[in-house]
Structure formats: C-alpha cells, structure tokens
Image (cartoon, rainbow, N blue to C red):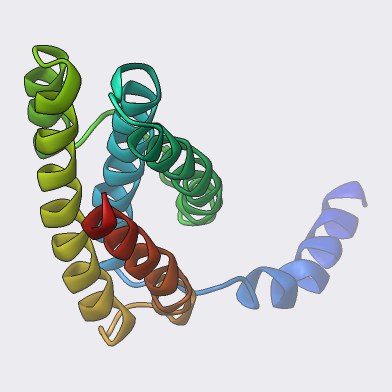
Length: 161
C-alpha cells in the first residue's frame, strides 16, 4: 500500500519537475568560463585594492570585488540548477595576470592592471554578447544580457584609470 502511495505522490509531483528550467548542453562551458572569469576579477580586484598606487586604481579594485562577487553568486545558482559544481578556479588568463601583477609595484602595477582590465573586459563583453544571442537556455541568455551593462561600466572605468 505504501508503495502505491509513493507512486501516486511521485506522479502527482511529476509536473513540478517537468516545469524546472531547461538548460542547453552549451550552457555548461559558458557558465564554467564565466565563473572562472568572476573568480579572476575578484582576485585581481583584491590585489588592486592592496597594491594600487592611486586611489582610483584601488577604488576600481573594490568595484570589481563587489560586482564580480555578486555575479559569482548568480552564476553559482545557475550552476547548481544545472547540476554543476561551481568552481573556485581562476581562468588561465586571470592566473597569468595575477602572477605578473604580483611582481609589480607602484605606477608599473597600475599601468599593467589597467591594460589587463581593458583587454579582459573587451573580451568578456564579446563573449557575453555572443551568449546573449546564443541558442542556449533562456535563463543563461537573460543572465548574459543582464550582465552586459556592468561589463561596459567596468570597461569605461578601466579606460578612465
């Protein structure tokens, strides 16, 4: 009798499971890369907060930590909804930039940081614009669209350093 009750309960819940958001296979690589990118921006922002020679560089670092930290939380939710485990890894480019920046101080740090942030955010904008119009899931397209204004704000701020 209990088995029959469980079966009836499971059948009754089936529409709720079917209504869960559908993700495309192409979403996983983008989300993994985006998470690594956010991790890198947070790490580099924290480094700029400590090593930036100017208040403007340190403030930009604070903005990166705040904005990309908040974005990481959104990405982690999407990852979990897809059954993926959010990563704490940096992107290859982020890890290389961090290593390079660790060897610099003062104006040299600020100049290299600015250059990296401009190039990195240009690349990020291109990737997010592509994803915003990709054939992936609506949830990931919407997240990409919603993220673009922040990435443009960061690029403008990096250009102003």
